[in-house]
Image (tube, rainbow, N blue to C red):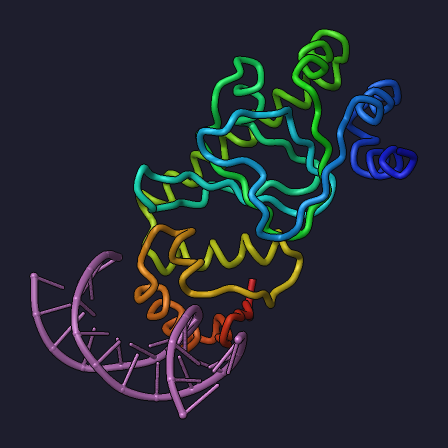
Length: 213
DNA sequence: ACATTAAGTGATT
DNA sequence: AATCACTTAATGT
């Protein structure tokens, strides 16, 4: 438990007051997940609200069939906006959350987060801010879909991924990228090839390196 | 050696 | 930009 308090301190010291940090450490359930683990699937019910301490989580919307679309990433210090609305009204998830890399998070019980809303000013501010940031990201995701060409979307996708992972080189297949961008693998291969010719990326099997930000 | 999976390519819509 | 059909290359058993 002591180590949790330390990690909390590290990421939330400036956001939450000490008593709230204590409470989070007390009622929060710590979870470690490995890259690729599904945190919550579509249709599942939320157990509680996740606070991401370390790592990165990918938030995906999936169509009735098999087509997916990456909405945004959660990074350290973030929480999922869906969980906020879902927890409070105990609705089912409309999104899927997959760990992008090994991550550490704290699950907070619904009752606590509800109580904290009136109890802690900093908590309320955090929740509202999280909602707002997520809303912005959704809008961004929408006009990426509506107005950007695939080559631009690809570039943004790779940049986001590099940013979230904190490195320029990462493991990835064309098939996975195609799923995230909701396009076909063949098209991904071709767009990547173009980008490689322009000197933007370096392609390897199961591996990609972004050469410029 | 064989099967499986990832990636590249031309042609067609 | 999507889909098909096919090839090539790398990897696992």
